[in-house]
Image: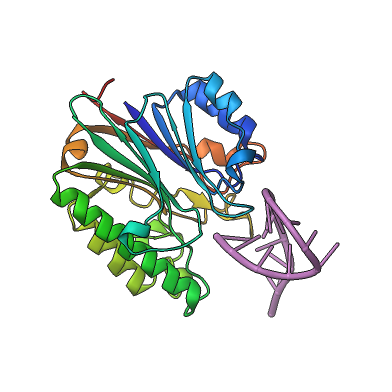
Length: 264
DNA sequence: ATGGTCGACTCTCGA
């Protein structure tokens, strides 16, 4: 089983790149963020032709998340309103899969608010989103579920996860309250799969500005958080840096994880 | 000393 997450920065602008990548890598499930379109504008046909079911939750122009799955889910739902984050922003979609050895595994795709500028309503929205994600995680883990959180958390977990910690120290992605919310979530019992695989300090995002890619001025903000049983089956993680060098790239690259004994 | 980029949409904001 191969799972992936990719902040694609407009699905319509990046459709060709996504289709080529899906054809090459054939992941079982992909979590996409910043699709930036209404559901009726989402280019589903080419993705479906490659064998995926497409579940999208978008809005006009901004945000937007989607899950692409080769396996038919039992349930799909959107938003975190039930967990205290009431918002019109399209930032959360999840599904349940029944794939051995799991009777059920819950896989969520999230796009956390950036939170800048700080302080202000955007930062409060970021913290409120993280609190709701924490409540959601707490409840599902307490119920004994298998849980995988995929997405753009807009959190730089450690100093090593950014090129210049000094430049980021007052940013919402490194603010102490942001870090508290991320580690409180993780300490519910989730494993940071990239960190566990020795990929702390490997970046997943490089800004379009200031030659950030050419200078390798990146940050690690796209994460895989796994509950205990999926973490036991994790075999390999990979940050596909080559995609940042593609023609018309997203500013984020895809992150993949391979699991063993986790087959439909 | 400092500018440099994209994407969606409108004449500007969000990242």
